[in-house]
Image (cartoon, rainbow, N blue to C red; front, side, top):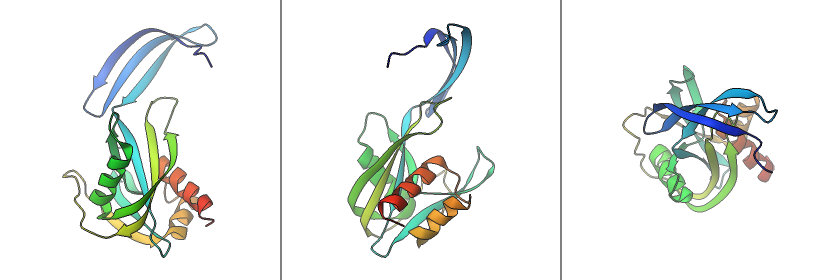
Length: 179
């Protein structure tokens, strides 16, 4: 489909190594003048759902500054836009859980909030796991929780997991594995 929006001007109002925020003057699809704010992400969001042979998974807990609350999530991080997403997934899984996987399946691609951001996320299923040592980023203070995958899905259904990428990934795995 052809893009019905016309961009008249773009002004970057904030920029850091991870995101930029721009103010845009536009002509809407209804041919009226308007404004739009866009948050551009400089990395891809990469989520991983590790599942062992007993049906267990791992969640990562941390206090999220942006929402001012503690959050349970699947292991995740950022992958450079022009780099291999699977390599980023392998790195993030090892850093946050100490796990390495012999089998990888890309589950989904997701836009996290497409009304204000171009953030694109990918979720991978990691299987045939080997446990090892974590190597957290210096800014991270994480808690790791191993639990049955069924319990993680129940946490989604009870509203205990609110992260969009985690919810989408866990529900997709539950459907694929008939949980």
